[in-house]
Image (cartoon, rainbow, N blue to C red; front, side, top):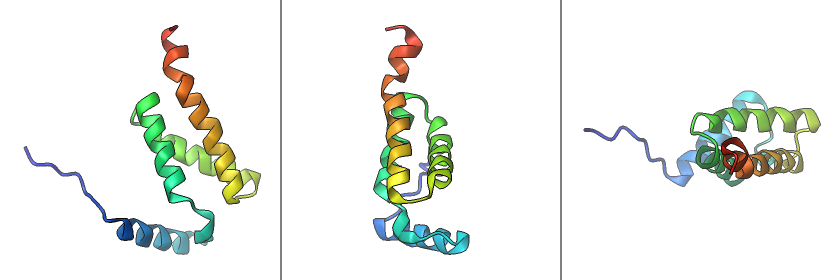
Length: 94
């Protein structure tokens, strides 16, 4: 079986983020890559893998509505991460 997973060097992820920010007219400095990757990891492990990109989108939507700063993003991510940390326990009745 062939592993089709793409492994990008950190520089490629930075380049991709810069390109997307330019295409969408987003200030690159407002994007905290590590924070968003941590969010995706926490949601994927605490809820379900398909919930990770959806949660990242929702964090961005909430942050944008709040003003779009790094702090707005951090608050949205913290809220989602907190929910993900308690999700399994609340859903299984443990």
